[in-house]
Image 1 (cartoon, rainbow, N blue to C red):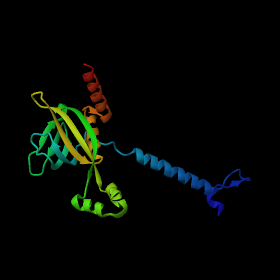
Image 2 (tube, rainbow, N blue to C red):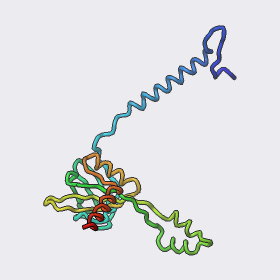
Image 3 (cartoon, rainbow, N blue to C red):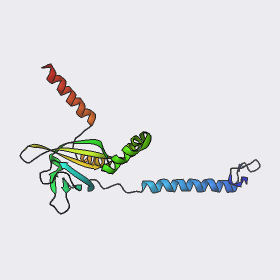
Image 4 (spheres, rainbow, N blue to C red):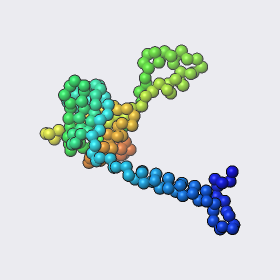
Length: 194
């Protein structure tokens, strides 16, 4: 029973043979795992990204509130609605990216009736699970004439951060919500003091 643990042999002044072999085998396994982890090739820089999104408004060549694919390839951000030509913006013309989050109630009228019919205030508990979270990605870009435009997309939770991070890696500035609110509050205060 004790042969799997380190045993001290006072006569030989070393650990038992089986225990020594076990330690060497464990050391070898850990070293091999460490080498295998470091041998993973790095991700290709500027790899194309493609996510499902809903174009809420902003792109001239895309209909409002239509679903499609938002993709980043080379130096172009494109929204492609199935069966239609894609709306494209060069990444160099993007000035800022804003990321927000929103929650939307799902289930429609049947869910509302179910919440109203639930006894003892159980409808509130149902409301906790009847929401789906989304990311909103807002882009500020300049057209070829220098005019400033904006576009708003709705993406599944977590996908907006993926697109924003890729755009930031390609040189687009990103403003956080806190920075945006600070700028807005500062502008309101200076406007009121005049």
